Structures are given as structure tokens and as C-alpha cells.
Image (cartoon, rainbow, N blue to C red; front, side, top):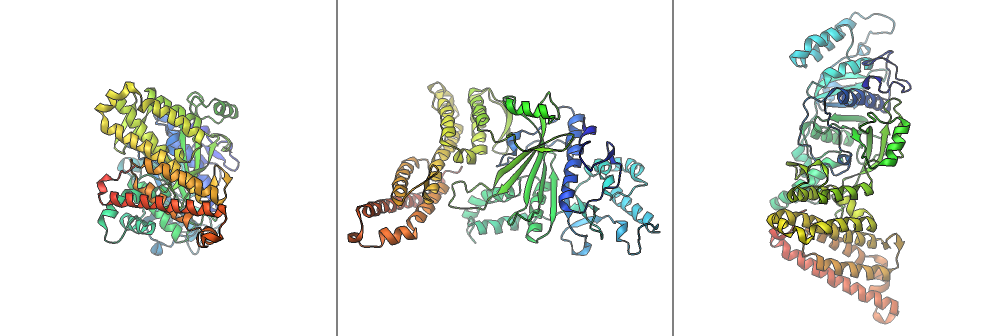
Length: 576
């Protein structure tokens, strides 16, 4: 099947399964990205799927932030790293190391239609450069395949790719003097000053303080994970770390670029690239082969009718997910949310057409079904528990609790933001399991694990109330506008509820409560109209507002006192 992939894409004339029938000329970064999308999907995803027995499809839920590291590395699958610059290479001025491949258009005396005496020398030099970086077992076949070809022409790239994926480090693309892209380097080493980036970023977020080792150690993992997720990755391998931090550096320099990485563990093409509309961070896309869930009946019907399945029997599709980044906000209960899904597309394996109207990964109905399967011990699949243990079934209560912990961690930010109706279903499922008298003896034998799951559940419950406070800060409640009296009444109600719930204490939530509460109290109109004037000048309405205002001040003082007592004994603060 892979040989026929994208055979009906306009402008792509495949002469054979590994080459184009005509010269490929690409002069914009957007066109290069489209070219690389089709070539990499065909040769790095579809070809292995057809040729490698029991190909490990990507779980569609793993494409939802936050991302978890994969513990398995599939050595038989391809991996790659590349950078493309929308300008000519300036070797000495570049900020990374690579082996240069030259284009004959760079030769000063070269003119179209005349044979240049250096042309064969340039081709031979490029051939020797690539050959020297290949594993010994591939060198002879490489020379046989490319002895009469120039390796940096794009029409030769698909055939070259089978060698490049076995080469360490990055491929480099840039433009020639005519503005046309070509393969201009191999064996690139992308710098990643991880230590400095984490410390600078943590200081900017307010999570680190100069000289405060305890604060650094407590928040380092959060800062590290937030930084990596801004660029589409978990805390992961050197290849993906380099891609993230190098794209960060290029974006800050104002470069027009594209960085792509395919990991042998995540089996996902991740692309970061500059666009005019992205002002703070590069655009992020991920492409992977995923299986549509069997209970998504309507989606399956539409996809089968349109011919979108790579493998109709196994319901395999090519899924592209596009993300958007979020600025860190310490007053936001979902402050750990660096990334969210902006859109998703299903790519047709023959025409390349992208269908955008089918929801594969953000389906709340299926989320509740999966949760129900987990607590019943009927879930089939694998998860990574706390980044270091793979759990492959839910037969035992211990494994169910580990699955629950991982599931709640994965979907925590979504559950906090989803509707009351959805959360009511989540509560019903979790309470039926975690509070069941039949399970008490089992849970007592694994008390620490049970406590971890319950803490995660409690965090989400409290965070949803803090999310209501966030809306109240804007004088909004369930989509409706509020006057000041309604805002303060509901704020007092929420703070009272939270005061009694923080027996399970989470410092970041209490910090958010204090920040939001202070912002509500510092509203300039509220203070000028109802707080600063003498009581004799206020109406009954104004007096009620002033009384509620004082109640909020008192409640925030109580939260501040609780936080201070907890911080004096740091071990008492729960981490989620």
C-alpha cells in the first residue's frame, strides 16, 4: 500500500515508489514543509507500517498534552532530525556544526546550459561526505545507488532517506542563490544549553530565586516539563531536547525555519516552524499513525466512505494534530498548561487531502468510557506510571489504581476545564470505585497508592472550584455576566467551600486562591464606589457589598495563615 501513497497529490509526479519523475523545485518554506510531510509520512510511517511486523501504532490519546515519555525504543523503526533555513547557508556564521553539502549553483562561474568542470568534483565530494557518515554496512550500496546522482537535489531525497534515517544527527536544508531549497548538510549537531535555559526560564516564571536551593529543587521539574511542553515534547531524549531548544533559539533570532524530529520511541513526526501569526513561539504539529476507537461509529463510517483508512480492517489513519501555546500565568489554576490542541486533521493516504471535521482525540464521551473500563478492570492497553513503569492491564486493583493515577494526571487540565455535566459523570465513576465498601480491604493493603490517587482526585475537585473563582474575577459565572453583589456573594461561597476542603493541601492552588482574591479586592471601581466612601454615603446595596468585601478579606487572611503554617513545615505540602 505504501508504494501507492500520495500518488494522486497534485504536483507530485512519482516516477517510481522511491523517486520523482521530474525535477522538484521548491522556493518557499511552506512548500518545503508540504513536500517533507508527504515524503516522511510515506517512507518513515507508512513503509514501516507495511513492512515491520506488529507495528506499534500511536495511541491517539498520547497526542493530547501533557505528553508522557515513552519507555520503549523501537530500534527497527526510522528516526530523524532535520533543520531547514529559509536562506542560503553561511557556514562560518552558523550557530551549529554540520557537514556541508554544496550545490553547483553556488559555483561562481556556473551558468545554466553549460557544463561546469567542477560539477563532477562537487557531486563526488557530496557523495564522499554522506558516505563517510553512514554505518559501514550501507556504504557500498549507497555508492551503487548514488554514484551518478547529486545527493542534494530534492527529487533524489526519497531514495536517499533510507540511508539518512540510519545516520546520527541532523539533516540540513537551505536555499541556493536562486532561492530554491536543497539538502545542504548532514550530521548536524544542534546545540542545547539545557541547564542555562531551565534556570533562565524558571527565574522568568518566578519559580526560581537566586540562591534559593530549596525553591529551585522543588520547582525544577515543573519548569523543565513546562519548557519542553511549550515546544511539543515531554522530558525526553537528546534528539527531541535538541529540537526543542534549537527551535527556541532560532525563533528568538527571528529566523524563518523548520525543525522536524521523528523519535524511535514516540513514532511521531513533530514539526516546529516559524509563521507570521505566531509571535511568541513557533507553530507545532504532530503526525502519527493511530487507530480509531471501535466505538467511534460515526467517524468510522465517514472515514471508510471517504477512503481515509490506511488499513480499513484495523481502522488506521494518518492523524495530524496542530497545537497552540499558552503563556504561564501563576494566577491560573491550570498554570501547568503550556500547550493545547488547536485543531486536528485526517490525511487521505492517496490524495493527501486533509479532513478537519472529525474529532478523533478530544472526545469526552470516550474519555468516560475509558475511565469506566479502567475501574472495572476491563481496559486493554498500556500506560506509563510515573515515567518509569509500564502497566499493561487492569486486572489487579494495584494496576487499576496506577492506571487511574496516570489517567487523572494525563487529563487533569481537561477535567478541570470541562463542563459540570461531564465532571458529574467522572465523579460517579470514581466514587463508585474508590468509595466502594467491597474494595476497602484491597485498598488498605496498598494504602500509599490509594492515597496518591485520592490526592490527585481531590486536587481536581478543588481546582474546579478555583476555576470558578477565575471566572468570578471577570464577573462571569457559567457564561453569564454578574454585578458586583453577585460576584462577591459567589466568591464568599467558593472560598468557604475551599477552606474546608484544603485539609488536602496543595500549595499552588492556595497560591492561586490568594492571587485571584487579591485581584477581586483590588478592582478600582469596586474600591472607589463601595469601599473608600464613608458608610453614610452608601445605599443598602452598597453596604451589602462592603460587608461581603470584608468577609473576603477575612477569608483570604485565613488562607494566608494556613499557607504560612504549611510552608514552615514543607513536607506537609502535597505535590501533584
